[in-house]
Image (cartoon, rainbow, N blue to C red; front, top):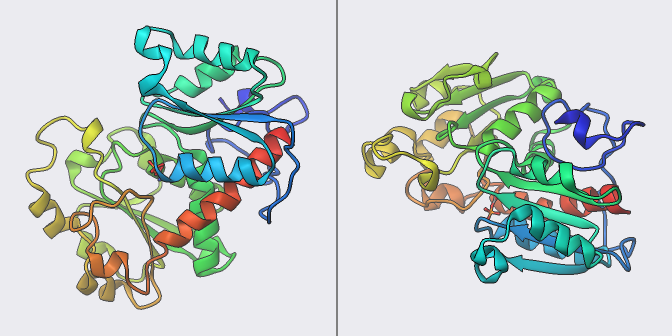
Length: 302
Ligand code: CP
């Protein structure tokens, strides 16, 4: 997939995954409102729900001066059986040059990129359990703002439903690329992947034992829509073992940064006190999403 997203000169043509993307790949500037995409059309093509990703791409494209088309799968001709591929080709025929695509199936966005025309760019806004590259970029920007530019000194713990999380997979690629000092991964055995996703990480199921000395906690949403029944005995038990509350956060230390990609299941992954507290970077992540997505769209389409 890395080769598919780079052109012959190593420039980004699509953004499908952070896996294998070289650390020095230029991904635009993070800056203020500019009109570099005036006359271009960008479509947010979402086959799954979204608040943050869809809205921030919409704002990002608007701030760059593009026309923005919000494709609503629930009222579209996909309901009559039209394929995602035909949908893309038809919107392309209307002059849309940029597609921001979310899809429930692993690899669906890469499959669409493979049939897209020469001048068309696709951004993966989340496919199945695989990848959510702009979430990874905004998470790394937030970590850098919270803890400084030297990732080699950072200890980061990723907590929760890693098995079903494209955010976790993406952040793992990004953290490794940036040379982070230590990655700890914590969750119930039933929610940890059993392939090589966690290679090189310190893995455990005792959250309290994983907290000592961490610089950042990346809390994950329980992906109940992708989960078979019975992986978690109850939400109360999950919260008791893996929920982040003020007492646990105190163990990590007063400088530890708390991240969560959203949407938060309050009282399950984190308590209100932590989500809204002084160590939470959650809304900064959201704000960074607009800037990062402007940079990505400018790189691909500018
Ligand atoms: N973080 C994230 O992808 O949120 P949305 O599902 O609301 O876009």
